[in-house]
Image (spheres, rainbow, N blue to C red):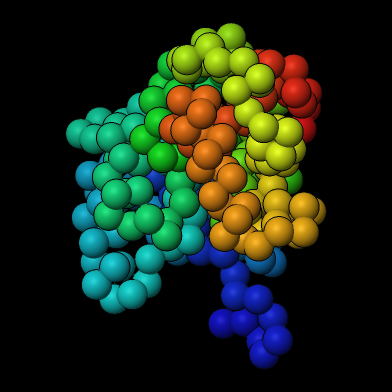
Length: 224
């Protein structure tokens, strides 16, 4: 339990069919003061079963880290169900460099971002914190690979108003609606409306896809 005046720790749930991967991730989080592991599951179905119990107790995690390739129910299918049933829970996909197609599917299913399995402890922490804040987390190397195969209507930036271009750049930089509102001196509701308009005009399904689109079009670098 956090002391008075401190922010509560971010609750993370681990989903991977390899126990050694879950053990390694748990070891990462044990050294971080602001993140704690709430539980773990060996596959997507196991995760959904445990989340149903957690929801009944009003003890859902804040962020789920899930592998994409698992028996019974894979990470993509699990992400889709989790985001439909528990919209307050953010999902980060655990991936290897060669799984671009699966990462696209996970993003379309509602994942907030992705994390390479060989990422160091600092990167793992950054990904979880970003997801918890409602921000986009992109690994620069994977982002370059994903932009090459981004499945989206090829619309040009001319489809956007100048304000919407500003919004898109801020989204690509990983800013939340609250951050965007502060940067542009607008209300958070207006920022949310602008983000929705950008996604609709570009034919994209998520903030992460918008960030990848902005990288592909050269509006921001892949190192953001």
